[in-house]
Length: 76
Image 1 (tube, helix red, strand yellow):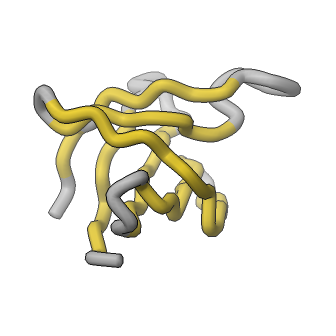
Image 2: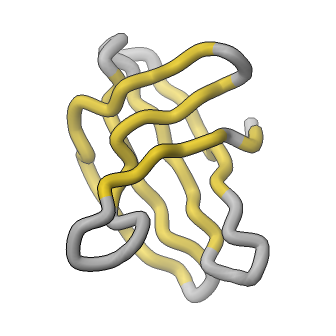
């Protein structure tokens, strides 16, 4: 399950520091917790808990595309 998503981020020390909300289609999901974060050579991954209690893995590519995708979903 890989879907493009629109993500709004907190930008503190650096741009796109952590996601605060994301959109799947017309639906908005507020991030209540960043559970985990890890890096690969081409992306940053965030495991987040949405306000609905479910877990989502968001991937932010760091190549020129600067694209966010939903990599996985798990019911809370």
